Length: 247
Image (cartoon, rainbow, N blue to C red; front, side, top):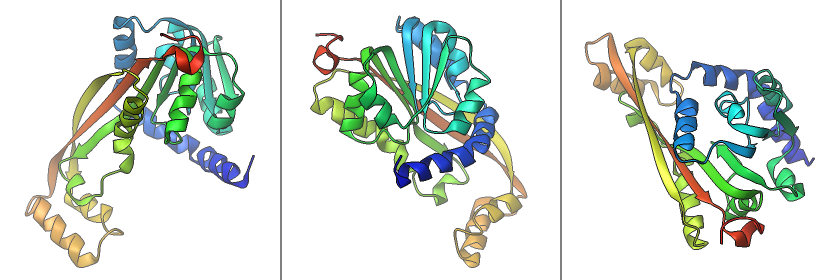
């Protein structure tokens, strides 16, 4: 691999355990809700399922019983070790950079799935996914992640807008797609001191004091409601991209 890919792999290897802790702490049942939706749409079960940038296998346990052969691809060996502990006998782990995998792949899958994929950025990336699928492409991303207390003072994550980019690419290629949103909320109690410390490195001290007083006033703690929206883009791959899909 190139130095850039080695650095990318090292980053995700180092982050793997913390990443899995974050996933386990999530109270949002997106994997189960998504699986239920795909069953209702007759997209699942399927024979062969490709999970690109599958990480530690957040969706593995919900999907692996719904396919005869599940392939999870990720660049990080440490991510795959964690995913392997969740895997049934029909699951194959592949440690490889996504572009290399898709370039070398010569066996299309019934369904290509990718959630929160950090390297799915360009039209070429998207069309490479199309060539790997004989039937369905499923792209899942968070499109809204806001809360009442912190979000007003934070910059928007640019990844929240990637689904809009995918839609633009699909429209350019005249590929018909559908979308489905999964919306979740949760509320937690936040203390004034935690809020102040959270922004201590982001703003000058006087500004942190000001926004803390503006947000909390005389209260020592407040409820903070978080709103999270996942959007699924799903479509059948036209025949022109893979020689196997719909006309």
